[in-house]
Amino acid sequence: MIAVNLSAVSEFVLLGFSEVSYLHPLLFIVFLSLYILTLMANIVIALIINGDNTLHTPMYFFLAHLSCLDVCYLSVIVPSILENLVVGRVGISKAGCALQMFFFLFFGVAECFLLAVMSFDRCVAVCYPLHYTITMNSRVCKSLIAGAYICGSTVGLVHTIVTFSLPFCGVAIDHFFCEIQPLLELLCGNTSPSEIQVIVVAIFAIVGPFLLIIYSYIRIISTILRMSSAESQKLLSTCSSHLLVVILFYGTASSMYLRPKSSYTASVDKLLSLSYTVVTPLLNPVIYSLRNEEVKIAFRKRWRKNNSVWK
Figure 1 (cartoon, rainbow, N blue to C red):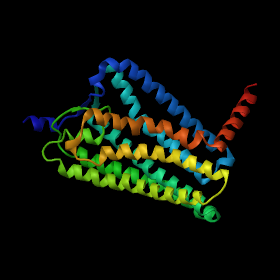
Figure 2 (figure 1 turned 90 degrees about the horizontal axis):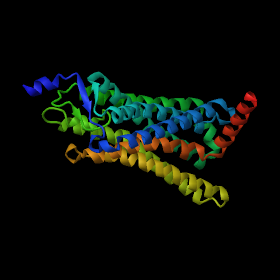
Figure 3 (figure 1 turned 90 degrees about the vertical axis):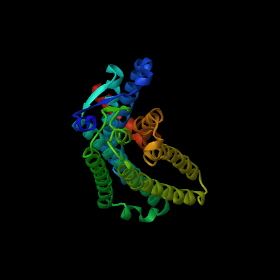
Figure 4 (figure 1 turned 180 degrees about the horizontal axis):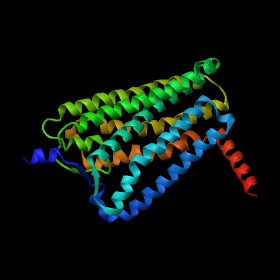
């Protein structure tokens, strides 16, 4: 009878970081600061790329979309974290929980594929420079972006519809947002089919793009090593920075989604989630854009132009 009643719940409770309630004030300041800093960095980058004609190339086209994705991705999660840190346990409606999970998966999976697209773009630019403008033309770039968003929306819809069509035997989600693994803990009966579904989709959405990125960077690095110039050292440094962010993002996401429910540990899972929901969106603009000389030049031009207008 209890299971039947709970399966018809209209609201869940997000426990958040209840196990470290004494750290809530400090965590609130840290997450709010990171959120504001990440939003500002990504918005500024998107505006600079959009407003400077010299940056209207495939690489910066993808970077602008990455910045927009990071803003959306972060805004799905961090407000929920901040609310939880202020008021403690947070109630969220079943519909609201479903929407949060859909948008998190939509933006997260789209970013997985976008990072793979960006690595492919760099591979073509470094390995086949003479064919770059033909291969990465406007139609191809738009199609690749559309494909990333389609994959994100498909994965989001599949997981959300399947998960929320099943009966729940609990309401307390031991997490800071509606992620699929903690929700599996609340499902009634045998959850093996749902676990298999999560792993199969993760292989497609995480492992697939990651393997493409690794292949692209192997080609890039092998091409760079055949060069004998200062430019090759700069490219190697850039590649190593990109790979570090990629390994952090895909590694933590894989650790979360490519294992059975029996191995879930709430405290560890929260740390893993923070890595790909908060840390990576902050590192992306630093690694991909702010270390880029062309972006720095465009930023200085925009800064001088704005200063002259205000004067």
